[in-house]
Length: 139
Image 1 (cartoon, rainbow, N blue to C red):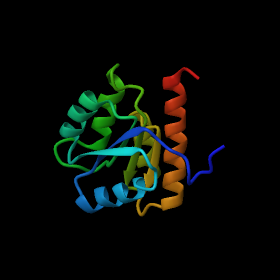
Image 2 (image 1 turned 45 degrees about the vertical axis):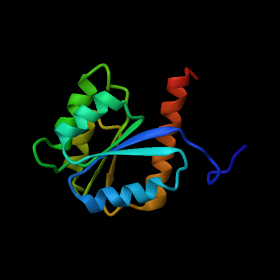
Image 3 (image 1 turned 60 degrees about the vertical axis):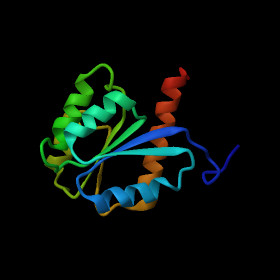
């Protein structure tokens, strides 16, 4: 059995955030998971296009963005049969319980607040990717 550090992934993760520093930080964290490819989108419209074209294994979604909020993006993703099963983790500086509740109502699978705890973020991501891979393999 492989240890956590030796675990290999074959996954595509879409990072959706209009703040370049946030994108770079998430990409740096994801580099710790060998085999994870990242895609990026700077707004919700771009995110929906990429999600439909690339069908990522996971979407990391900011809430406060221009053109379309993360809530709206999540609703669109979860209402489309093609993207419905893609896990969505909302990552935001918002930390009120109402923000969490709204994210869950939109169909988000998880909700993390900034600043992120790297270990917690990676643990949650690994867990969701495992579940996604099991579902895709029929196991």
